[in-house]
Amino acid sequence: MKKALNTKRVVLIDTLAVITAVFLAIAIKSLLPADVNVEDFDSRLVNLIGFPAVAILYFIIIYVHCIMVMQYFGKKSNLSKQQIGVRFGSVFAAMYLFGMQEVVVEASPFNEWGLLFMRYQFIIGITDAIPVLLLCLATSYLILNKNNSPEIIDHLKLGDKIKTVSLITVTFFIQRAIGYETGLVNSNAASFPIPTYLWTALFGLVLGLSYVVLYPVFSKTNFSLLQPFQIAVLTIGINWILFNSFIGLIFQDVMGQMLFRTGIDIAVLYATSLCAQLFFYSTDKTNDNRR
Image (cartoon, rainbow, N blue to C red; front, side, top):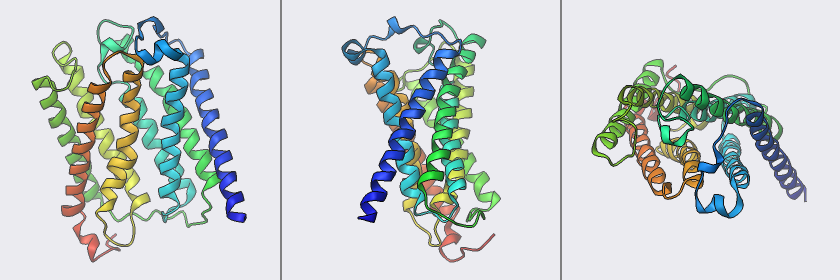
């Protein structure tokens, strides 16, 4: 009976928190000077239920994923609930903020990349980032029943972190560059090569930093090859796919391309993080206290 009541309490808190975050995201967007050309959105779903309903549905799905992975893996973590909330919230917020700067001019109200495009994308990104950060902080504090020491249990040395971030940055850049140059990935590389490749390097760095920020949450006393899958695919990967799917929800015939490009992103991220786990962190198998 007690467990059932606790489950009901968790569901109620999560539901209210997601609704609040969705309302906050939409409210902030309506107050900031970032005009959206709704008439340009021509997907079947937009024509069927309207753009506002599509936007609300998108926010609900992506925010539900955020708190689901945070709470599921957070309950198994050795970190305090404050650390868990900060780490998940900052990673998702950074993904949205910097992900919005991807040079896809046709998905914006502008015809070319420049300061106006960057300002517009920053406004949209920050209005996504603030609610998800607050959502993770609030639900981790209210839901996670943890009284752990605030000590950060991190099995990665500084050198391991630098190598991991560098490797993820490089592999993300290379696979995207191949996609741009071969045409497998639709991009603005031909029209705006410098900003396109600068963003690619920057977002690769964001992915690398996100991985090492989340690693202590998933790090156990025993070496495990599940950690790369849990972090790179179940947490970062699915959320990155959901984030990019918004373009497919509002524009006709682009969902396949968005799923394809983000699918490759995550496959490469997973393969890279798995290699890091095998070669950089291999001493975790026998020495968990090497700090």
